[in-house]
Length: 459
Image (tube, rainbow, N blue to C red; front, side, top):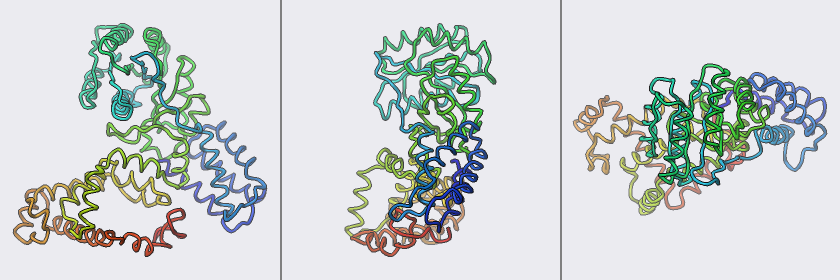
């Protein structure tokens, strides 16, 4: 996410290393680099000008305090300005209205509006413990209503039926009446998108808005459209009383221009950010965490929150007890660890949230890693209970049977067994106080802020 911007800003900071103070001269080049980085990231020009001006104002003449180098001082200044540009803090949905609180989804066709409605329903149901209803007012796009119904089934929320023979305004009114009858906490109303902003579209969504008086009117926009995302959001904002923006497809956005432009151009907060295709890949937008990730400092808070939501803590405690008693780390344990990692968005999603691991994250191919994890789980599933618990039993004929059962080759089984053996040795070192010894051994190889002074080997 936002790799190009992250790389350019990192290079800018490296050039300032070894300087004792931020001056007009040494910051001039750095600011030129920051300006170029933002423009290449497709950030809107007025936003770039204001950003650079404020960074310069804060940076010139700033003493390097305590052990900070000018590079680190500039990172702090740029980080603070990124946070300010994107909106200071996360602004959650205002659902304090008399139930059902109505959330209206608006946006152009292809931005992922319908899928985002399903994702938002899942998030509100899971994290906010709300009873949620979904309704589609899209009477133009073939199968739009059916798509939303499928999403409602997948997320296990209430689907309120609608028909292409009804007007969008009529659908919205009837859905609201039904949501009240069912005592739902939240009603999410999906609307039709268009390929471009037009008068007819705006009039239709205005009439839906007037009919149901939503507490939240969210503009859903594809972040990969760059500064066009901000301009489209502005046009919608002039027609509708928007309360916030949802950026979709941010996991595929290497530039980041929309995230930096939307708030400043529209004056509306980014409330959520879509980080993938899965239904749970919608996250509240935290400017400070996104700024930290742009600057290669990771996002440990989000990683911890994901772990708290997705990791089976009871299972983790049982594994810790088992290892402390000197019992081995078997293939059943390996499978459960891989499945939990998958729940947290896969390896690359986890790595990119670690401080200093930006380049490592880009080297981890999400698609390849997911395929490898699925293969490994498939191999373990082909084993008997006894083989999972006692991997040493797996010899020639057993390997052949397991490989055939998983539809793979014997060398794939050998590779898994070798990886398991390595992990098993590592787990032994970590049990019984071994983790402290391991961390001492790693000291000096970890990035700043993680117990060491250097970077990862080879980085």
